[in-house]
Length: 147
Image (cartoon, rainbow, N blue to C red; front, side):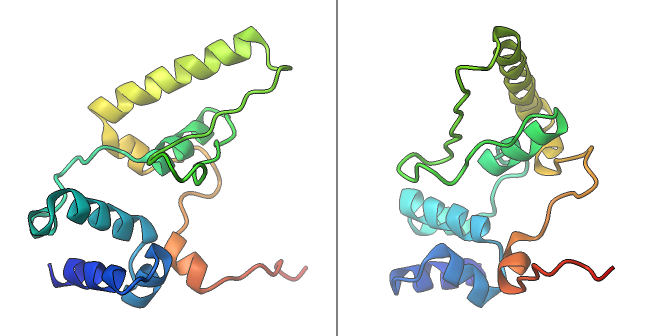
């Protein structure tokens, strides 16, 4: 609980989630979740652990779409709407493609309700799984391997 309290105190000092995550060595999404709970429930919100099987978040849905061969949508815009996925099919998409997308989203919804860990651990069928976002932000390595 002391880590959660430090997150809230740093937020009260005006630090952004990214800065708090870097200082405390945690994921930015974890900071965002605890700040949200604090805003909604005050101290009671940070006293208890998140319930097991907490609902998947937008990043989980976007990562799961990759398993179906669907490009992940924009998830960090607009910031006015929490947990927003920005879906922008072009007019060149066929009805069959849109119907498949709707079917995949319906399947992901069912998975979120029945097997949330399936979403939290996605993608499953790609050469690279999830990266540690906090570590990647601190140790940026964009150089191509020699060869």
